Amino acid sequence: MLVNKRIQSGIKNTVVYVLMIAVALVMILPFLWMVSTSFKEMGQVLIFPPEWIPKPFVIHNYSEAWELAKFNLFFRNSAIVTLLTTAGQLVTCSLAAFAFARLEFPGRDQIFLIYLATMMIPTQVTLIPLYLLMKQFGWIDTFSGLIVPGIFSAYGTFMLRQFFIGIPKSLDESAVIDGCGYIRIYWQILLPLSKAALATQAVFCFMWQWNNLLWPLVMTNTDSHRTLTVGMQLFKGQYSIAWNLLMAGSVISVIPILILYIFLQKYFVEGIAMTGMKD
Image 1 (cartoon, rainbow, N blue to C red):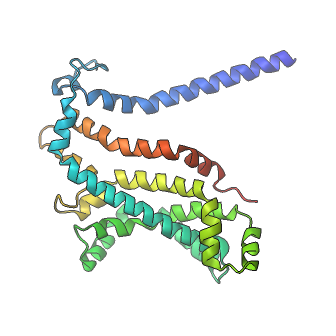
Image 2 (image 1 turned 45 degrees about the vertical axis):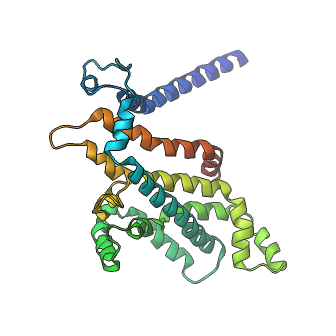
């Protein structure tokens, strides 16, 4: 009987692992194809059946893509917008989460539900009103217009609030006895204990802002403030697309996200696992 259970458990685990490997392959194949195409000549890209190994293997696609798309400028703009937006979102979301998780005030839960309800509103619905508001501020084609609307996140507030709730309130009470106010409790107790959740939110925000196309496309009129995602549209002509250069540019644009995830992977996994847990 024990042997049969072990056999059944082994078969079950094998099936699960096979399915996970199959899903992983499906997820990674487009990325591998992007990398392969970035090293091909233009004439090789649309060959059928497709060739995974480039023949010949060319590297100049990367230098051409860098020069054609003004990567120096667009990369700098993306870095400025993404880093400042991520930093701003961590500040606003953590402060809002602290208020909703730790402070007692009339209508707190109702306000929080209304705030969460904004996640159900598609971005396209608020695009025109937000654009008109930025126009009134004089922020069209400026870094302020690209950054400020993105530093608020209902999802980030929700995730951090759930994490804060999981931290025992007895720590707050001990801090109050020692003479700490709300700001010191937030800064010296909750934030140091929330590195995993903050890292998770930082990864989410960085990925979203770095890959964001719609808002920078609407807000920028000149190359001086255009981001990398908008700049890569230069590879698309009226009648054709330079797929090899576009894929080379895409590989370059993915590198910062991969580096960030590698360094924050430990905190990212821990934050996802612990978010929502309560004592």
